Image (tube, rainbow, N blue to C red; front, side, top):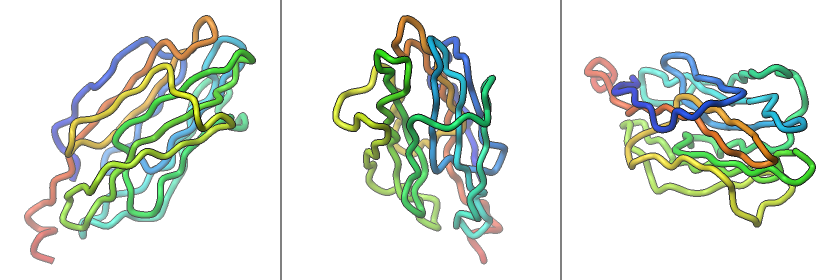
Length: 169
């Protein structure tokens, strides 16, 4: 069960997407066209009562939701997103993407955070990022592009709690 929803960043964004209630984010991606973020993509998985993750599903948003992604990160099996960031290149493309993730145990606890990189430039830094406090996971994402930079980011988070009924199974 996901509880204690919290806004982490609430900038004006051009594309945003939220995981449905009971789902966790296990991948994030994006695309820009000219000076706009046109596509946001999430890989989500339901959080099952036994603490395991169900089969992955995909969500897309933005004014070009079906456009190909320029940068994306799919986390390893069992990991959930605990932060993300991006950067644009001079050609108005999302060239650098970071997703921070932690392994989720069936007890609901989160392991050590790791960074995962996507895009054609995996070495340079990001222009805007959100990193969550330990114990929190991402539940929504959004980005804004202006003057060829990521200048806005949106993120909400929650805490994973095992319910009493799932602990007795």
